[in-house]
Image (cartoon, rainbow, N blue to C red):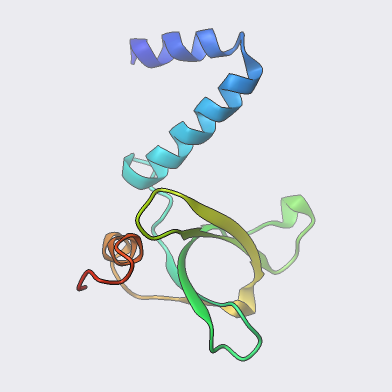
Length: 116
């Protein structure tokens, strides 16, 4: 859109602001845009026993460009907010869930009180 191009042009003059703006823009488009990124819900083992697990979404299946073999990046959304954290885990710690991504996100953000 013309407005988006104008904003991008202005931000080229302020590199730090541009980094923040593009990061937020990418995050929002990952949720609602055409380029949805949170389409692979997963269950992550957070300890060696597998007793502590978290729900999340794979954001990158191949991290070899970072020098990381057999690793994936997983976004772990927080309950009651848009915040979350990005973790890097071994592929063996990841179980893909065959469920609707939107329902999983709703479940996480609601703190687990929303029925799926």
